[in-house]
Image 1 (cartoon, rainbow, N blue to C red):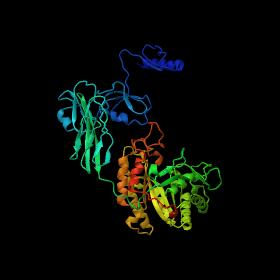
Image 2 (spheres, helix red, strand yellow):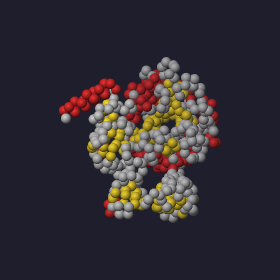
Image 3 (cartoon, one colour):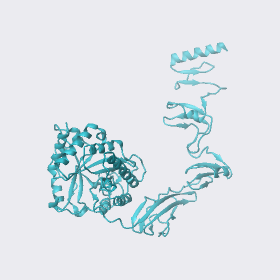
Image 4 (cartoon, rainbow, N blue to C red):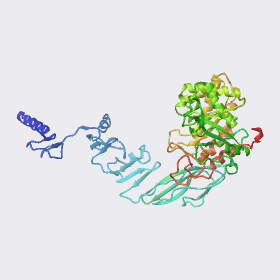
Length: 549
């Protein structure tokens, strides 16, 4: 035996040194030319590391291609492990012998299935019937043998909030199987044609309904639900609520804000003034374009004012350098803002603070001091802060920006909430905006109380504005629908907040093509300026006498 070990050692050494390959064999034959390791035997096997599925998953930083033998069955199909060889593909453990499809599913009796705490999509083998059973989310369904074609996945369409008592449903047309509508909840509703995915549906007003669209054939079925809310006429417009949508003044061709007859909008928030980085000191320009100075957009603004409208100019935004950051002190910042105020004869300005500037302490303090200097020079100047929020309210950085302004005795006319881009796919964007508004009310009340100002609740509410990004947001899966706008508008009137806005009026239309850029349209079905109509309907901008501006 000792001689055998010596022989093997000599053979291995020879193979490694001579061929950069390894051959393990009794007969001393050379390794195959294509192999780095060639193991030969007629009566022995290769034994890989053996471990349980839990031990396999616990291997730290497995190398791509690592092979182990799993000895246990763990989990529920399709996320289960079965005994056998597995390799790490760089992201997950993959079975070497398991073919795709319904293989090696857990085998359970009918009594075990009846007590199983399952989620939709779980598949088991029913040993009592020898059939595959899958859980639909409501009931267990049986599939015996191979059944094709499977029915199309049901899609009941988006939830709807309708002013009135009738709507058109928007389910998918099944490619396989037949569809049918049923009323799952709500009384007094009528589906005109239950088998038509685009059937008309009527109900009581006001009334809430849940309708289920089921697609089924002999192989099974799938279903999806949609919520339909019929509401009364929107609340009476508030005399104190204003609607001032953002317009990106740097897009070309320029949006024609003076077309009041087409848009119905009299008050705009014009975006954005930032620093001209080609000049020394704080020098305002539009969008960072050095050629767009204080004569830019004057023709459109003058024409709007001749119609009785007006503008708010917003400093900052997501791109460019805000003027306070470019200034050496609050006086230079004040002078830069003053240049814009005088050039455009402004009575209201907005500071949209985003990105790193939201947490940059020197520019925050410099801006707050400059705002106070401006209000001292221009009594009655309305100043708003536009800040990002989460459904739970302002972030700590946003709270610091507000606190800084209050510390410098700035009279904040409005804290405008960017109700968008939360980073959480699939949430109800209307509910998220309302939740943010409710949370900010509490935050502002606390800030003012801690600063020694016990303001009435009505005054706190009047310091809140809401600006959603209409339609598809920058974050995939975040979509602000028309019914979200209806919900936010009703909430704004009920709470008597200060301002409704949206980003942006140039997006308030349906796209022509699916690939149209996000800045140009909403990427959802809608009529031209339909969002503006919802917000403007509850927050009418009174036609101003130009001499009374």
